Length: 240
Image (cartoon, rainbow, N blue to C red; front, side, top):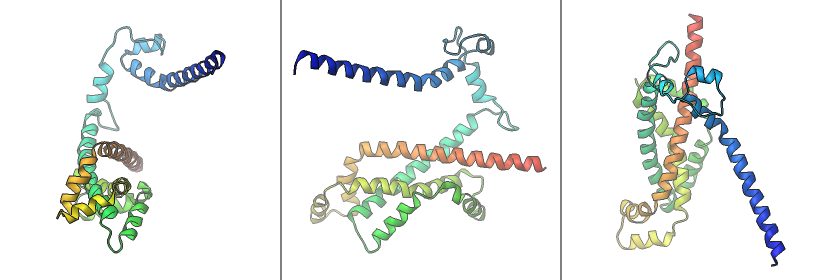
């Protein structure tokens, strides 16, 4: 390979990196504007440049949004909504991850009669839109006395998330050699010991991926439900 060819390859690679950096900066520009604007006061926003950094940074907008911003008729800020989200997402993600880990393990390495049908039903459950179950969910929670409670919402998100976590873990367990499971059975290991010593030891990165995706899915469903209920409440207020 001669010198001219190397120069042309390096030039092409440099152009690719230059384009990637330019598109990354363009993509991150709204985030930069949002963050820098949040540290400016109202006068600086009116008279200054959006791309300019704040001259005298202030946390007034952050404290107001957190503690005293108005949402509807209440001016309690975002703090109550944030902590409600934490109370719902953390147990929902933990419980659905644990159940999904065992379900995927059983479906992948402990086949039983009807396991394929059960896996197909769980797979079908992954693609059911959340809006479809809003009314049945509200009716069931009302009949159980769990309406407008954190416990009821955690239960809903656990049930809805089990299908996803089961599919996620099952696809990972399929790649684990079955010979390891058979050898563990020959050595006298049962269901839980095999899971603990073979599968659990290899789940570090996979658990992190499942946790991140489950948190995103739960937060997305929380925002959808909140927006729908907010519209319903505003409609009720207009009717009143």
